[in-house]
Image 1 (tube, rainbow, N blue to C red):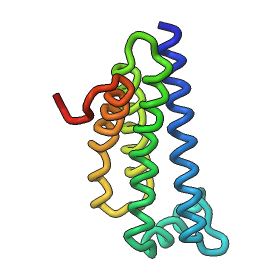
Image 2 (cartoon, rainbow, N blue to C red):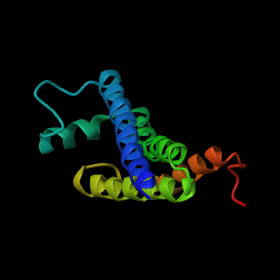
Image 3 (spheres, rainbow, N blue to C red):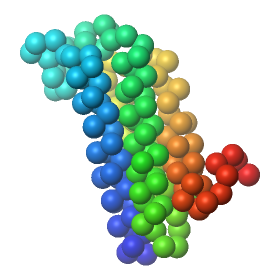
Length: 136
């Protein structure tokens, strides 16, 4: 049980690191205006409104990738419940994503990413288990 708890924690950290790396890459490709940072709500709103579709898709990849990478790491660490720990990581990532979408001025169509968190975590666990990623 302790190993599974550690698996979830390490998976969450790995997933968050992946997410932040991709988001930082996005800000390099699509720089924020002078004086705007992630803590500036008004500046972020105007920055996000000017982003092209590709920049928003990169953000979506970062978010869903968090659930996938975190779920895969957790599943690889777990010795008894790879699917369970991956889905816990995916569920916590989903909750974080919902919180993020409610607090950031993202386009409404980006809510499509919500179910993808769980699908990504499921796929990660299936990869670890050596099974087909296609739903059984």
